[in-house]
Every structure is written in C-alpha cells, then in structure tokens.
Image (cartoon, rainbow, N blue to C red; front, top):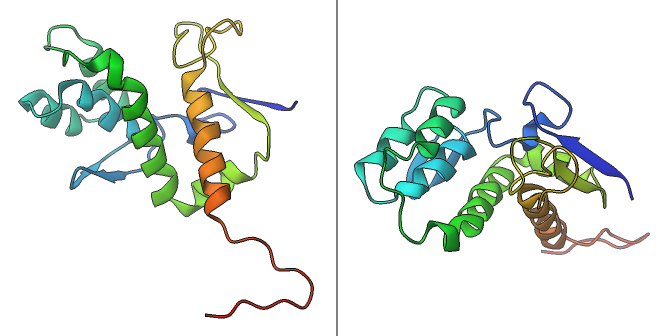
Length: 159
C-alpha cells in the first residue's frame, strides 16, 4: 500500500497539517487554522477559547493549548478525537481544493510523521497511533461517498 507522509506545512502534503493556513468556520466564528480551533476547544466556553482563536499563529495557538496554566476541560480525553474530526471535516469541506487533494491520494495510507507525537502522529518510527492520519482517511472516505457516481457512456444527469 502506498503511504503518504506529511508533517511540515512547507513540505509535500503540508496542507494536511493543522498548521496549514486555511481558515475554518465553526461555532459561528472564523478560525485562522484548524489548529486554532482544536486547541481552543480544550477550553470551550471560557475566555481561553477566544484568546486561542485570536492567537497570531498556529504555533502560538498550539503552545497556548498545550500549556497547563489553563484549566483543561474535564472531558477532553473523551472528546478530543471528535473535536479533531470536526476541525478536519470543516477544513476539507470548506476548501474544495483541499478535498480534491485528499481524493487524489486515492487509497494511500496517510501518516503524520512526528517523533514527538505518538498519539496524533506515528511517533517518528511508526509505533504511534497516527490518529490524525486515520481521521484524514475517514474524511477522504466521506468526501468520496458524497460525490456523485461518475456517468457511464451516454448517460446524462437530470435535475
């Protein structure tokens, strides 16, 4: 099976990174990146959520969200995968060019490769859970399923 590795925004498939500069519209607000949204949801319905939304960059938002100087919502471990799925789904549904790029990966395994992350990424050596890659593949399947079936020869669409 073909594998697509990504991590840095400036490298191949960097658009798959949550740090990639694609705005998302969620919770009736515009978020500079999916990373801003994801990190802010650790503190949903608090002033910290808005402070992270307004962070100057995805890196700053990530650092703010990872700081334990802020009170992490008590259910975070139970909801974090769903929050990530929501952020990734918004990014790829709101940016058609990203959906096309995702579909162009066909059935390749998508892997975030990062030595310091064995939950969202592969841990750098393949031993990690690669949850972000798995969610990207889930969203790819959703995008594919939502597409109309290709027309067969001589067939036309009505409507």
